Length: 480
Image (cartoon, rainbow, N blue to C red):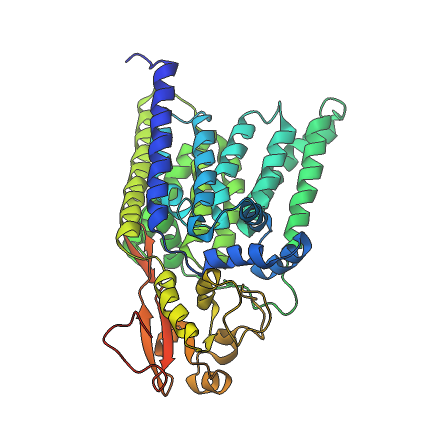
């Protein structure tokens, strides 16, 4: 079969880019932001200076790059209604950079529409939207590492600025580079390898510094994670990332072993590198991963390594390996399409629905409190802080021990009632919070669904408890 012309490739990539942009925009227009998205928006909006923003972000356990980008976009006039445009732009940049890599054209056509790229990091406005473009940049500079070491280490510093997971991945790449640095020192090639040495030490120091900067304040809530995970749970983490949810099943363990074995066979000529690059992240995920979107890093890292270690060969085994990778990518495309379709049909969060109810109640002089973090999703729709149990002018949630009612009262209704007497009480309606019952109040639930692969991973319902004597029950829950 004859090779396609450059013009044909450009036409294919242009169509893919436009379809990707259109798909993300269409899904984003139907997306209902939830607390994580609201939190970053509010931190950027309510911080009056860069230093104030950096101090506030320390409670989040992440570098401030995403929040600074959000702040700049706000200054440029971006509205909360169109917040989704920001992650979509970065994902589109990632797609453009993917087109510049040595991946085969059919991977370049499929990868943009996989679950983590087209949905999780293009529609939902989190810092994870930065991972794909930065990792593609690392991939490009990896191929030119010897000629442009400063670009490679600069890309790793950018990766570290995306999140704590980014720090681990960047640190893994720098760790492997120690081998080359030791050889340079041993052979005394200082003059010919100045850029390599400078990039390594400056990049390594900056990644280490970024890691130190995200250490949380003394009064911060205990970090998530720290769980003891069984083999079944670890297997589920791997199959969740590259296939679909099979948590706790024997099939998940078998599939996880097959996936790991296949990856090592694929990277057999670079197996040491592959292990050094991936093992620290997998270990960190086992310890810290608490939400499905954290798996973005594992997916994008493996995709990057499949591109980096790809060596085209005219053999049957090569064609089989390439076909298996293509089939796995195609499966993730199906997951992405399902979630985009679900986003259009159902609400991701109950926040936008609840806002109209709350606005009418506040207009009648009602007071409102929020029991947990989930209520933060309401704040961007108001100019000032609406919760009377959160003193101060800032609208974002501060993850301090004194502020976190979940940890302080463990959803004990009596203790919570002693603390909160508002006309409206906002709380998540899933997990332990579903057991809450406030005397003299009735509950109104606003539906929210978190989509993952071929189903809903979790409920993100928002509950508002309202005083019966002030807001008697009516036929419609859309009005107080």
